[in-house]
Image (cartoon, rainbow, N blue to C red; front, side, top):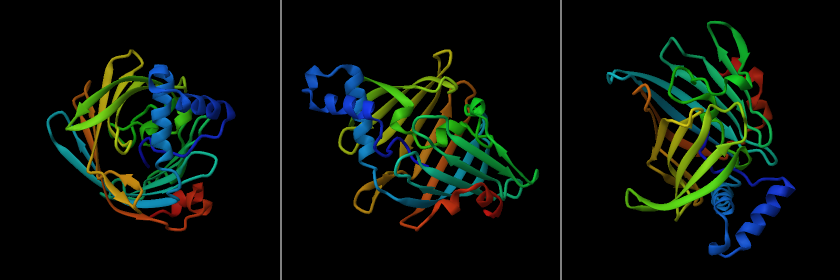
Length: 268
């Protein structure tokens, strides 16, 4: 589970487009070429991480400030020619313990996602038409917690902007998938390390729906940046969800066997 820092794309058309855009002087780039080049650079900087695990805390906060906390664990494995595979397992409280979510992110087609709920004792496939639905009652949609592959969007550079004392590129990402719950996203990516700090999500009516704020980045293995906290605020319901991450561990030696549907049931 990671923000838009993904592996390098593999389609010839995209490669040619990007190579061309990177060779152009900045003043000659179109907003579309510059937006794509920024997304590609962010993706390139996270290439080769292999696999990673993390402990997670989910805090659900309603419009009155009341909170419910959940404890989870996550593991993610990078794929050479496709999106990431990831597994999230809920450990506490008792009403969600043993629930598990498996996601195979794809570059050029809809993701495959499955949810295991112990109370039903069966694995449920998440239909692509339901990817905009809430993930386990949170303000994150199923599509938010998949890895954000470059090919999933078209891009448009909007402006430079200072945010919290950092210089950022501000780019617009328009989902390619017509079944996405979003008309567009606007992302703030810092110029020094190409990390995503903020994303505004606009619903299909092009009205501001949610804002994601990311904080507490730390660098691992002298290359890979991971954040300690994601805060998703729903402007239309006034609800929030916080995801706190800790105990990042890389190079676990995972294989495909750790990420199949059988792994959902045995992930207790």
